[in-house]
Length: 215
Ligand code: DX5
Ligand code: ZN
Figure 1 (cartoon, rainbow, N blue to C red):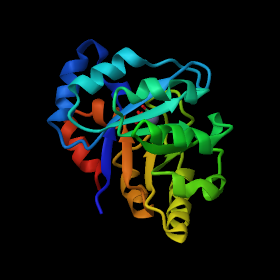
Figure 2 (tube, protein in one colour):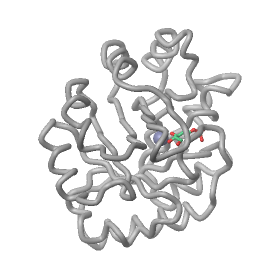
Figure 3 (tube, protein in one colour):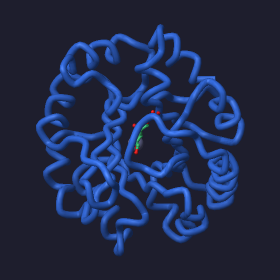
Figure 4 (cartoon, rainbow, N blue to C red):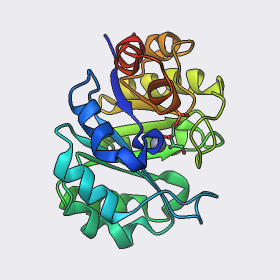
């Protein structure tokens, strides 16, 4: 099955954001991947509500919001106003993950949980039935343009086996350093959604890059 592709807006040209949003609207991209960083959970700050509001106003495809922030519970209600299709929190940032996922559902979004490279897939075994999207990080989060960590391929395989064993409908997403060189292996391992920043926005033909990443 071809993967869905979610280009990361982090790699867009923020001086021409509307132009890049229109490009994605008219491209073969499936979702907008929206990276929110707080400078605490990750050593970088990206953007917040004004940009997310702009995306909601102009994007014609689902917003896949990836929260790389501590205390995500404090912002779920506000984020809910911008109608994200998926709200993904980090496993490592949530002491009461079950409660956080209920809050995400309460604002009408699908639930996402991201795992840093050091976090085993087995950590979400008991809560998988509450997770619509499991995000396997193939880099340490914080920056676009980093090198893909191949361990992620094995983690996708493990996640797929767990999802099959538990009988849930959880989608597997991979984020970080995804390129035409690793997308086929990720899809073969069971990835449903591939995030790509650099591989799309730095490509000479950006739509051809999106089509290629689908596998
Ligand atoms: C990084 C973000 C990623 C990033 C991907 O922490 O979560 O979504 O933008 O960018 P590339 O595809 O360039 O690694
Ligand atoms: Zn991301």
